[in-house]
Length: 321
Image: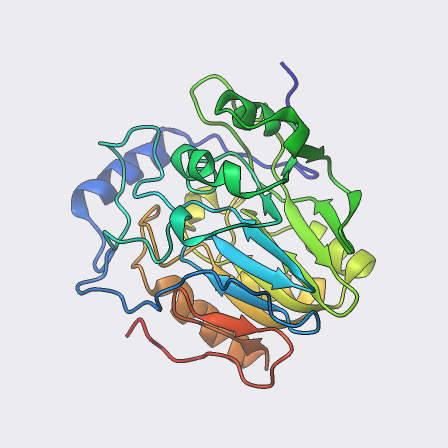
């Protein structure tokens, strides 16, 4: 079985001391790991008509799922629209809200679905099965195609890319770029598929999505090769010192935004699930503070709220308070 590796050494093996501390944290619990009241979200339903080709916008649905309307194309990214990021419908952490901000039936058609890696909080079987008839193309990192074909997706619909591979597609350039993470959906398939970040380049709009990633030199490499970017969507949640090599802390999220030469930052990988030992609002509070200290434009839309990329005004209301 082929195994993929990170660009730099990335130790993910925790010793007994770390495992014991995790057990203690689990028993003790962390304050405010879940919202104490219902989260305010904007109801979303896909427009039947696309916005003008010179108007691009992004809609975030919580965690890392988002939808792009970019220069006449409709693209879904990491559409985990299920209730649990788990192999079992009855086990694992639950989504904060019973009702997902958007459901597969709210989409009539998308031009492509892009995936960053095969973890359950990014690649959801039920979501893919329901969405596969609504798209002509899946664009994924190497090896992830086998997950999709197992669920009934036609081989003809799938394009797999490795790091630094470029795809000219429908007037856009898509680049599969490195991330510092890992993959696997079971006990014995770790790193058998590739993980990645994505560069999406149009004639007028440039977007970068980090996928899941620890901080590393790849961000500067991406910025030097493809930046600057109008918008970055960077992970800022589910971090812990015990696995800091594979998930950025919020302050590192801001540094990654600077490294790739981004203009506007939307923090993702938070707001839907508790997957780490921090309060559910800690990621957005810390990343906002760090962004302000560096004079970075940060946008914090409500789930389901669209952000016009070339706007002068970006959603920044602290709706989680």
